Image (cartoon, rainbow, N blue to C red):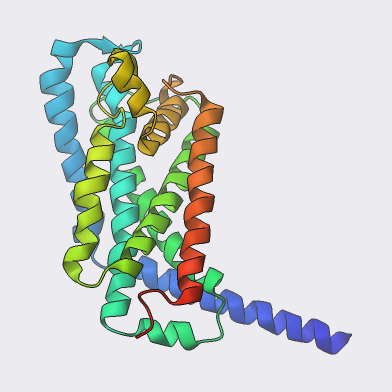
Length: 266
């Protein structure tokens, strides 16, 4: 009995060391070059605030009972989270494939769920860091009083997890460096701009409003907007259901790809 307990303890200790090693490596990877990974989103999003908030915002007036600058701030923050969580895992995991040191992780006695969790948590950490920076930048342009800290943090956490998983799947299927830019360019960017970042879907004609409901990013942006401003075009429960459903779906798909060794075994 005592021997079994000790063996189980050593197993958990081994797994915790394996997970922390992957996570620390992922965090050090983007923190070491923070001038290229953390700072640029803050500058880019600051330009959005200047152009859309100061130059265009006064011409538009209020939206949803808030100034245009306040209304678009949550969406701009979410844009940064989505882009950086996705790109962190995509570039990191594909780099491991390209340099062929991913094979060392795959042959190690580490469960696939632990490998996936380590990479995803690295993407989540970068998403949270960028979210904090862009929020600070936004505070220089408008007043952001958090309506619900619980909802705000939960949405950021779930969204960065979702797009970290998406980045992982993209990296698994990518065969060359050009492949990791196809999805962000032709899928993420259009969905983000059409996801209610700069407008309320209530302004759209009925056909386009219903079509917008097929865009998953719309639910993330509106749930985050509710967490900060307390207003949303989408019911909060519905938004969390959609986000949670996609997280479960992409997690299952990612684990399946790891188990089958798709794009990983030659």
